[in-house]
Length: 80
Image (cartoon, rainbow, N blue to C red; front, side, top):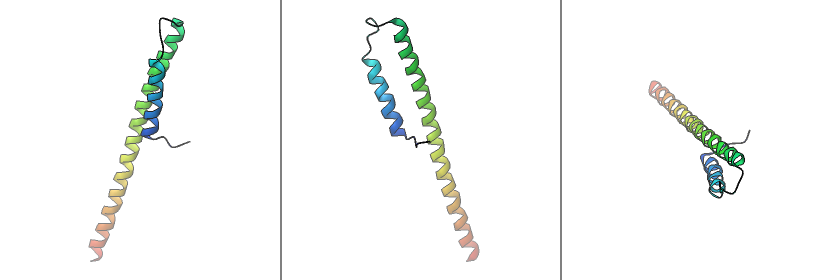
């Protein structure tokens, strides 16, 4: 699995937004337009979910680092 970043998610969703903005619902098949809109909704949902997961993962890593630092500090105080 490749690493997903917030920046990568933003680029992907921006590309999809640009593609959707270029669509003209009056000049295309309504069913095809609906498919594009459904895809856009799914992309938005997946990007939001992935963004939340990345944020939670980053916070978890930071918390683990703080816990390690506190343990080391307590060990130093105990040894002194």
